[in-house]
Length: 225
Image (cartoon, rainbow, N blue to C red; front, side, top):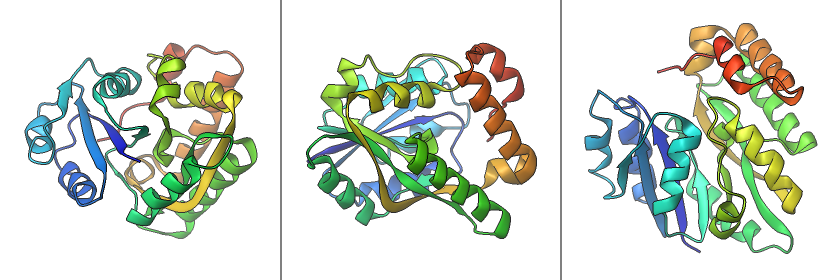
């Protein structure tokens, strides 16, 4: 089963080579990168690893939808630039997607470099995704391409596009959380602080679920580079 890995990027020249080099060595994987207007050479770096480099308006939902339009894999995997999936994770993904009733899912989360505080964040994220079946985008959301298009793709909103999409996805069938961990950078928590970042994330989630517009929520969420 061919997997198209779709990566939205914006000014990620520093982290991008490591991510793409890792994926380039994985079997039956197509890399699709969509740049949102970088000024640091991100698209040029991406073209060293894949010819499928596209440009769009900045915004993860918009960029991921553009990438999906150009992907040819049976499975779509949406990956953040600062996230890494071990080869065993892709094998587990393929196996799970062949199970009856499974429509998609995500990975367990591990934040690197490890530490007591970020380990607590990882544990909280894994409990949330297992109990609520509500993984976030940094856990690598995946599903069949046909279902993605049937659902109309990600909502093109400035924030919470991953949550909105997962809420729709899980209504179509079984959503799985793979036991293999995806690793992501601690850079957001390093810059914002663990307590403030965690409190802010949960507050934004609860406000969104309560009906607050994502455009209003962006006032309390700034991009980290």
